[in-house]
Length: 425
Image (cartoon, rainbow, N blue to C red; front, side):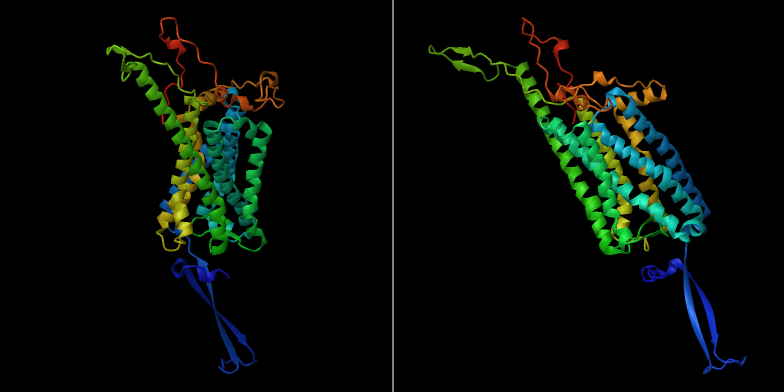
């Protein structure tokens, strides 16, 4: 009953019990001899119990998200693990994100369905089970957010600071970063188990999670688990956009100069005649990334954008403590979109990135070939001992290749034009 004051009265049904404590042997009710105490017990009102159509819709959507999300994220894990072109250190974070999504689709989403159908009997009355589910739900959501932050910073260093990438992101260090993300996520949810906050079944969202009534912990959770990684994500992708934009403008200027080499190059000689000054052919500095790298960064940004779009309604309701006042269908929509996000990343990767599409085809076609460890080269030039992930395969353009010289006629053959001569932003 400790949280009774935090609940809205209309969400509960009042059940009054009369407890008669007779202190005499007389059967008559004597006001001076008998003490009558009235105890009011509040039982939570669950909207879906009285609205079958909404319950059916909620369970169908969450059930489909659980099924297809599990299949899709397992497909991502298999593709990154088996397909050689996807075995990069950068994609280890994609693998980490897929593992977090699998936990959501295998454990949290099914129990969200149970909460919608039989939440009162199964979860509301069983604190131990609800506490176990919540202990997986909160750290997994935090891990997803911090992993997206790590992905953005990984792409930022690779595109904007390529000389630092081989030193910061090796196979071992990237694996440690992923383990550290999970350790941090568990650490941030530890207060729920030591008395600062506690887990409970949400009568508005039909899921077991930490109790937002404890406002001080809620603020701590949002700041450390949402706002800080969000700033990292925005910094990384903003810097990438500015870098790619600058390279694109530089290439456009160089292309314009080559198309009209005599513009502005006339000068007067000693006799007053005009001569065309020799045009010094300068090539723009070759960027340390390719169109494929930019495409991957755009895919990861779109994944982050979809994540924010799916969670924004839930975040507003939680931060504003609006669950009790919001319409019931809004609360249901918020949890369905939030937990349904875990099923969208596999679809997004396949729609926006050719490497992942090819990886899906390879795995589904049972053409999963392992990589020969002797064939992998690390950034230091040594053979990869793991045979699984290799930093040198993040893109070979980290170490720019030499530009081929033009033919004797001064024209550049089509085969000599690099595929990253034009970059989309």
